[in-house]
Image 1 (cartoon, one colour):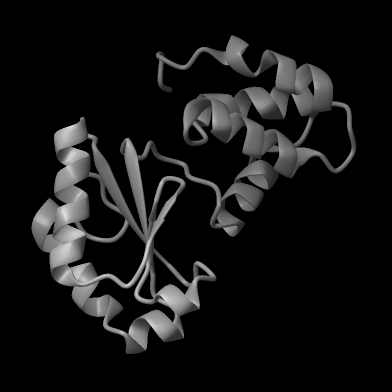
Image 2 (cartoon, one colour):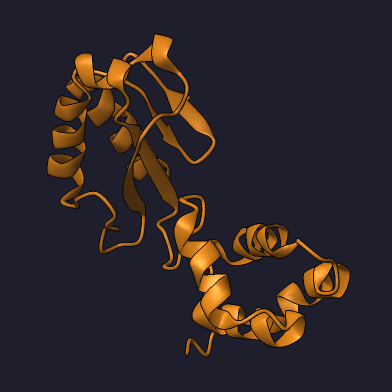
Amino acid sequence: MDKTIDLALIGDILDEYADVKGSLITILQKTQDVYGYLPKEAIIHISERTGIAESEIMGVATFYTQFRLTPVGKYLIMLCQGTACHVNSSELILETIKDELGIDDGETTEDGLFTLKCVACLGCCSLSPVMMINEDTYGSLTPDKTKRILNELREAD
């Protein structure tokens, strides 16, 4: 278990939702908002407070792609791999990111700055190829534009 996890941070969430039937997804979303991911210790605590089996919580957490079981970098790069992005060379953008950062899909840079996640669709087909970094959307990507974006984020840190 991760000893750095302060379970008191999710106390209010559990006070509000622990006894509300059908609230597990809401609890997990709010917990992930607090920690940036779903720490194992938090899952155990949620199970204890709600009476929902850890296996059921893990089943929900692993079924929905919105949930993360490991910490992500400061900048979460979600690269679209949908049809429009694919036909507009998203694979070339993926290779550029991998080369620039030295990571593959699902990995985080050693400095904890970037995490790369390929996603099925971001719903921004007219901007293809497209990626989101945290809450910001970047479209009409080229390898050069992608490198500039990554370098700007590196320098801003």
